[in-house]
Image 1 (spheres, rainbow, N blue to C red):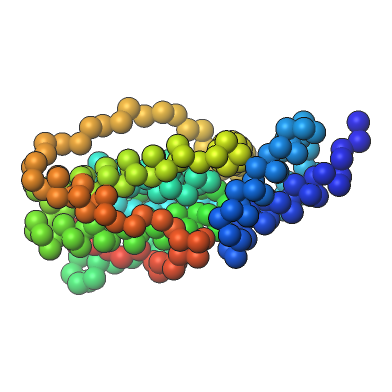
Image 2 (tube, rainbow, N blue to C red):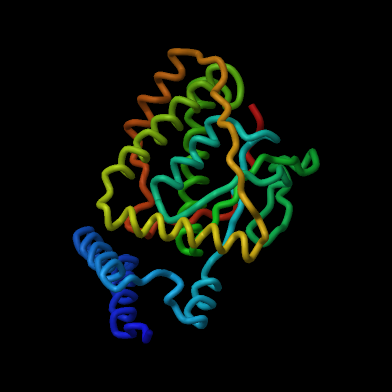
Length: 259
């Protein structure tokens, strides 16, 4: 059966419109809704793309690491990663093996004081379309540095005591807010996000031979109530969005000192 080339081209234009930085929110929603309707009406899926189109899309896919501040993955940093993916929607992640803090080109980053060698840090890999991954990395790095700076200023630390509780409260509020916003998306937008998640996973398996498995979520540690509530209050008040797909991209992640 001949594929409806005109319909495929129309769907592609609609999706391009939805991804355009200059598109208004209403235009994006309408474009996504109409594109999904056309795909449903004509029984079209990703498999209907030509091999050249699949290759072109694959070339735009990438994965990029972001780092925590310790060897293990802190509960509040894990919550922040989940919040970022929920906020953007079209980016996936997995927990990678700890590694030295590196620039995007793979160069090891030394501590600011140069008095010690590089330290191994817990890390996550964001993967998906390159432009979406860049947004996720920028949002994670900027928000993580903000939370850590506020925690040090108010509670004197980040990974122990009330400082840790403050960070956990802040990140949990962001995760809750991003999750609530994701539930308010239109069915058309949700369908596109699910399609992208399946595409991301297929690309990761075929390109990097990585197969993901679910992990049991470890609960946060003992709370210092006032610090945790203070973090939640600040997290609820924080504007947690990647902007109109034009968030300022962060430079190489900074090596934050341990508390």
